[in-house]
Image (tube, rainbow, N blue to C red; front, side, top):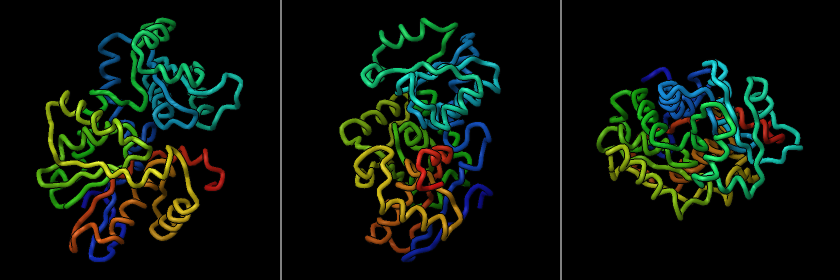
Length: 293
């Protein structure tokens, strides 16, 4: 077993392991380095001097981008969904300490982040900018996430299912292109995304030239909203951490782990099944939940 893959539990004859991406890359743990690596290479090849992206006050993506930009000697600008007079979150405090400039956007302006004209106007204010979409959700981000599978022996051929949390679907698209044949990939959306996420993943797969029908999205476990930590989810999360010694984040991996536990309890995995969870990091975001500190 890979040193990054740990046995978590065996329950109802289902074996559950976890790939600890939270243990890799100090500056950009979890899936963030995989999403950023090829974007960073493209930025350098284009002669860019400024990395420009979008995110919220506790964005794991912006946190990783700020750290990587400082390490690589590049300027970084975060277009943040927040009021300019607000207190900075611990995430944004870190980003500013690492040299990232914060460009605050109102909620209405932030909703225009996919408007090419609006983004071009923002980018024109900075020196030789290179745009990385919110969450690293582009083709290069998906291509980079193929590398996650290289950390799984046999590209996961010994598992019946691989499960990961989904915010944009970018990681799932990359993993889907690389995972071994016969493995079922299950994405757990962490927000209400029935109307668009599957289509977004299919577009990325088309761009990757790897349109494989080896995945599904299970929309039962988003909890009603992005970043919502309900009392039952908090109870599950804290019990999981106490029992197995693996810290989760409340936005992504707690929902994923809770989903798998629920599916096992309902008998949705066959007896003898082997399931691999992908821990996508995000632990710095726990600072947004005082009840977890």
